[in-house]
Length: 572
Image 1 (cartoon, one colour):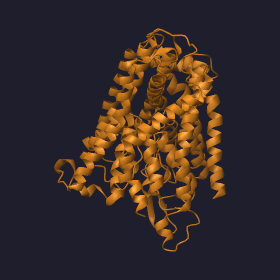
Image 2: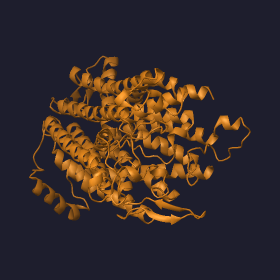
Image 3: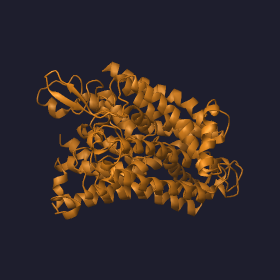
Image 4: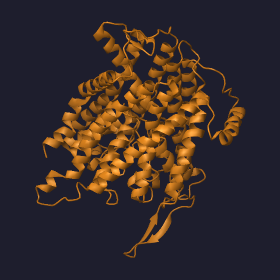
């Protein structure tokens, strides 16, 4: 057990240490400074801009950024939808996997476009290699979109008074080529040499120790899994995700994949400090996020190490901790750490089954996605935190009787209304979806087209845990996470369409809001700091931001958590 804890702590600390130089490199990329990768990527980027007819030097305001962002995402959605809908008839399908149903193709296409990768299918039988490759493309570009949006906000915070906030396409392409691609190549090589397959051949046949002949799926997995984590996507090449022995073969690959999903969210916060030349601000933001992360991860690891009290009452020793749903090659400590890392960061990959987590762990996993502001996904983690900064500045200004200001710009009614709407939208989508599903299940409603049979048919577990499964599905969708309590029968029109709508709204509205706020503030007159200016790079302000996050999350979600995982904990 102590060795397991040492592994957890080592991976976490190494990720923080390495994130500082990576953050400095990201800031240089967005600023346009010279980097050591310029000789490789300058010709590639010039070629991309030349054939696309895009002038990467043309400055855009926030509305033009938003128009470009939404346009390219719409194109990717329709392309993905039609590939999934007709994949059975297309090339690169050696296992002859069938077409997706329209509702499943709708859900899958949206899910990968919005960087969620909620999978209502199993990779071995649900998609062709062509579909996997296009989904891998979406894992790059969806992460790049989030980073480009964050870069625009960085730029708005840096400039004194302007409506020229850089070029979306420039930020987007550079995010993909100079940041996501090199890091993914490093991870893919590590996985490849550890046994993860990278081939376009179909299933292989092996003979087990019992003498049975078994067909084993393979494919271009190493490249897919690399960007799955570097881009905080989380979609598994295989149905079992990173519990699969080919997707995550060893403790070493487990450490690499953990580092991969931590590195960019960590580095983006340090990049903020380098970009603005305000290192203290980035340290305050990172400190708040890290305290929130530790408050979630410590109870989870302790709970998983202590084992299941129901099994303990039976007189069965649990010296290795709670091992249901865990892989022996990993153990409960690092599985618990992964479960919070993947839900806090919105990756959504799993190296254990969250449906088998202890109730305390399940509540922490849910709370991580409900808060949705500690580290977060590529770029969008900062956008979510930015909303809470605006609210904290406004509340702090009211408390001391001064006009709220942030980095020399007045926070006025319009910005606060946008921030409040974004903060309210997240619980609204989660709780309204859960309420609808719970109503149908409680009344055993005949669903007709929406579900084959009555609504109770989609629940494999009754009572508190069944409610948690439905709550988790909508929480995962709204947080663009993609993990799930897999006891839920979700591949049907009801869940595919309703979660698809939640995915769409919860991705783009929380991007629109921060871009609008940043653009509006950038256009305002700069006010030099004075003796009465609220300092936003201090510990006191960090405490204020944390308090705002905690109050909004607890008031919004505690009743739902009390009905689900907390009720399950007290009933054990």
